[in-house]
Amino acid sequence: MAGSVTVNAQVEAVVDLDAIAHNVRILREHAGDAAVMAVVKADGYNHGAVEVGRAALAAGAAELGVTTVGEAMTLRQAGITAPILCWLNNADADFAAAIAADIEIGVSSLKHLRAVEQAARTVGRPATVTLKVDTGLHRNGIAPDEYPQVLAALEKLVPEGAMRLRAIFSHLAHADEPEHPFLDVQRDRFVEAIAAAKTYGLEPELVHLANSAATLTRPDLAFDLVRPGIAMYGLSPIPEDFGLRPAMTLQARVALVKPVAAGEGVSYGHQWIAPHDTTVALIPAGYADGVFRPLSNRFEVWLGGARRRNVGRVCMDQFVVDLGDNAAGVAEGDTAVLFGSGGPHPQEWADLLDTIHYEVVCAPRGRVVRRHVGAGAQ
Ligand SMILES: Cc1ncc(COP(=O)(O)O)c(C=O)c1O
Image: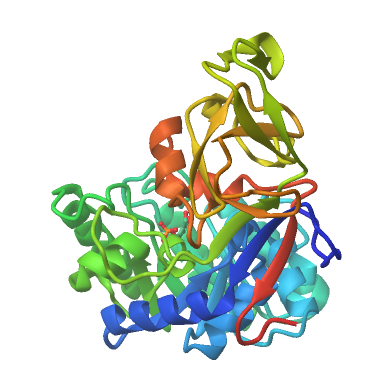
């Protein structure tokens, strides 16, 4: 997505930093005594990691979480001094740069640990590491078989001063089903992993397990810190209203308004034939901008004070909406809201596409210009 503000942008993702702050405050209330790590990976779920990170910290988040060293470096280079954890790197990542920039490194294997050790020796500074333990998601995280070897290695590295063990953490498989019994299985395995570390004389400064869904529904899993992502962007991970405010609005300005006669087809393949004389508006956004082609003929935008249905195929750069007799007087330059403030909720797209709203807000890209509004926006 284009990062800078362009005058007269055709398609914009407007990100409301006041909504981010509001959502962080809600998450802090649910977190109780636990601190909040704002998850801003994937460029802040496509909302802008630096801007969202700053807004979240100003609203009371204590730390930031990302996946890669590169993402963490971007935040540091923007002048953010808060603790930053990155937890998903190949073993040949630039750990030396991370150590030099005081970035906490999540370790998921003995190989990772050795690579971080090597980097610490090269830089001549202790590495701050956090162990990611696999408690049953079987994705990223130290496998149970390998865990004793990692602990045995750290048992030597920590006293020697080559490493500081900041935290132990894990990630849940069923957090969006708060009653699922596997949450308790993972909690028990997590507690065992912390106890195992203690038998090697390793005392993490903090331990953490909860993402958004667990933060909002399972206070018993809050431990010392919670790691919400999606809820901070205002999207609820479960069908319950927590008072969150969606932060992103995808909008575009009408490029053309014109009549279409009854019987004429619209867009590639003429998948829609006008049933009567009508008026259509051309919206200059397509699948190259993140408007999924399978939405064709199925979704609506907010335009001219009403919902207007897309007719015909969504193309690479454009789609068309039906205005009927255009009694509302929609004109070129008017703003159509594709999702977000005043328009459809991202969940509507998710339902039509058989996906989750996470993917919907991650979709706008390419020519879409991101613009931040609210306190802290430049
Ligand atoms: C390790 C970890 N913690 C926290 C999160 C945040 O999850 P959510 O966006 O569901 O709150 C993620 C996201 O995938 C993650 O990978």
